[in-house]
Structure formats: structure tokens, C-alpha cells
Image (cartoon, rainbow, N blue to C red; front, top):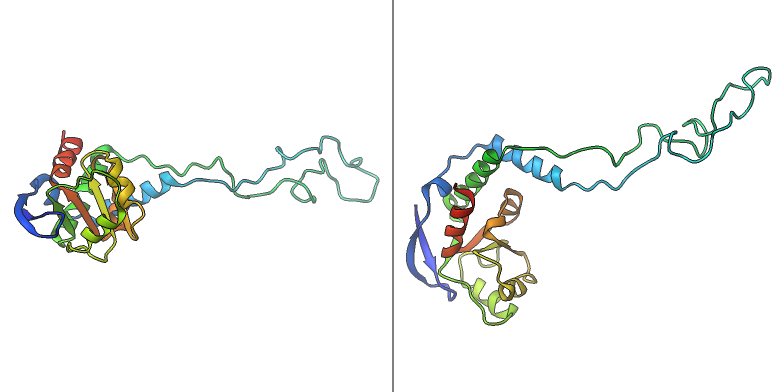
Length: 209
């Protein structure tokens, strides 16, 4: 598959060939859904936690003797039946939500999403994106000249570039990552994917082994 190669001014300067094994993979919606669910579950942070009767303080002594008082029998004031007692079936922070998915499946699903971006013409390739110093206005102005103007956009750089990161991170509806850290959830969060010619090589070197 070939796509147009743009410069920072938004002009088509050439064509670039996309690796078939990455950008021409047939979509399997079930696999993509499985990977998205697992990735979201692995990111989940559990903060809600209630104590059960074995964790609350006190309750070591039997409230009253077993027989002869006319009251119901109780063994501890920390019972869930008592005020200040433990909680039954409350949220626990020891619950495990993480799901382990084989690496080959994760990579296959990533290629499927990248292929869909290319197929739906939501992939924009730049010849280069280099900056001498941080300049948010300059980057925002350049993005308006590209096909992705006004849309949510994920920028994938071939390597970490401090000036580029500082310039793009505050632009509305724009995210920026290194190409080697691309993942399905981030790709599906943004409509367009913007990458440089070198980013394609980085993706190939990272995920094709």
C-alpha cells in the first residue's frame, strides 16, 4: 500500500510504501475487543476497600454470655450485624482484574488497528518533524494544513524528541507518543494517526521480529 508523504507545510512531496505485514492485516473485531478489554483491565487502579470482620479493630471479647440473658447470642461486636463491625461483600482492593494476553495476539491486534487507520485514510505520513525549540503555536498551525485538521490526532515519533513533545502536548485533542509505545487503546482514542517516515521503520523494527 502506498500513501502520500506530506511536509510540514501540508504539501504532498512524495509517496511512501507501507509494510504489507503491518498495514494490510485483515480486521478481526473479536480479537481487537479482547485486547482492548485486557488493556483497560490492566490499567485499572483499585482504591475502594472495606474491612471484613477479621480486619476491624476490637471485638476480641464475647459481648455477653451465651445463655440466660434473653438476648440473641453473639460472639463478637465486630460481626457485620453490629454497628462498627466488618462489611459483608464490600469492595476489596485485593481483587485481581489483570488479564494476560499472548504477545503475538497483542501485536496482531495492533497491526489490525493500524491497517484500519490506513484503509480509512486516517493515517498521515510526514517526511520529518524536527524542531529547534518548543513552539506550540507553530505545530498547531502546521497541523491545520494537514488532512487531519481539526480532528483528534495521535502523533507517533520515531524516538523521543523533547522539543516536539513540549510543543504538541498542550494542543487540544492531540496526543504524542514514541512509535515503539503504540497501543490499541491510544490508537482508537484518536481518529487520526500522524507519523513520520522514520516512525514506520521504528514500528517495523519494534514489532516485527
